Length: 267
Image (tube, rainbow, N blue to C red):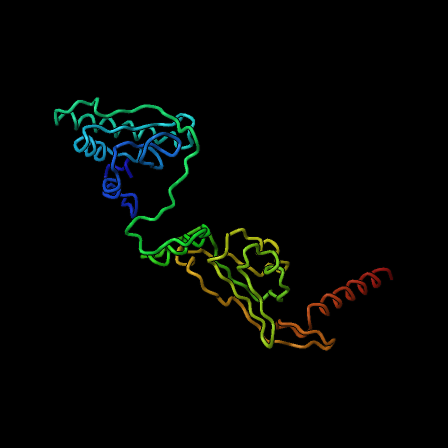
């Protein structure tokens, strides 16, 4: 965002105006550095922000962590460019560049984010709200556009499924529920899914397919993925496929055929 010279990138959060409104003291740093106002990276501080805070407070303090060993180290060049542009602006305003104070000051203890919600938040956070539940609350109240999201997945099920229930058993989040009565049904709640894909990997019939997920899939709902009517095999077993016989009889018949083929080859 700060690096783009053509205003081709818009932010829907952490905008310049939001930063300006939230700052009481112009002291900035990333989560690995000192500074009262935390940013994902100091490269987020544009020349506009530097100039604004110098004009308002007479100075701005920017603290860096160990940038050279940071995974975002390439962003350091962006910050340097922003810094140089800010100095040029201040020079034109007859303000000393010494009003910009940049120093390395690593955070002494791990940064703990403030999970408090701003005054104008449209919902109250419940005590000990789980991370996914907290995200769901945010999405429900604020979602505007449809966007892809890789924190969950959508599923589809093909006719290979025989309702063996392995997918339900291996799901660590309880996102898959199978009901068997006069009709067998498979329900899926993507808001619970963690995208581990255990169900896909464990399915012996390769009946489960992954589909793209979106942010609005975090809104809780039970999706009926698949259903088949109840059948009773000649052996007495109940099953839920389109086959003429149950899966157990199908396996037995296959073994018989293999045995007969083996015996036939002997003679």
